[in-house]
Image 1 (cartoon, rainbow, N blue to C red):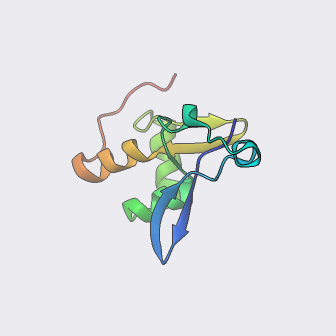
Image 2: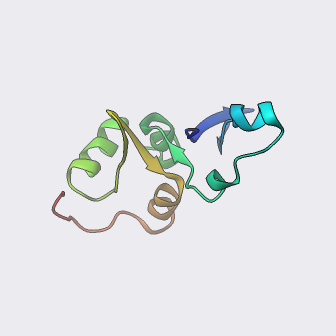
Image 3: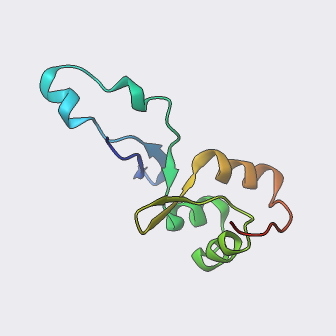
Length: 96
C-alpha cells in the first residue's frame, strides 16, 4: 500500500500522492488509493494554518484535531486542516 504524502511544489503547499511503483511496473495504476485522504505532516499543516507545530501538537492532545497515526508518525488530513482554516477550531473534546 503506497503512502500518501504532501509535497511542496513551486513554493506552494500541494498535497500529492507518490506514484504507485508496483502499478508503474506492470502498467496498471492502483485506483484503490485514489479515494484515500491526502495527508499533511505537522510542519506542512502548521505552514498552511500559519501556526506553530507546538500549537498543532497541543490541539492534538486536547482532541481538537483528529490525528492520523502511521506507526509513530502523526499526520493530519488535508480536509481537517482546510476545515480549521475555514471555520476555526472546534471546542475542547476529551482525547480518546
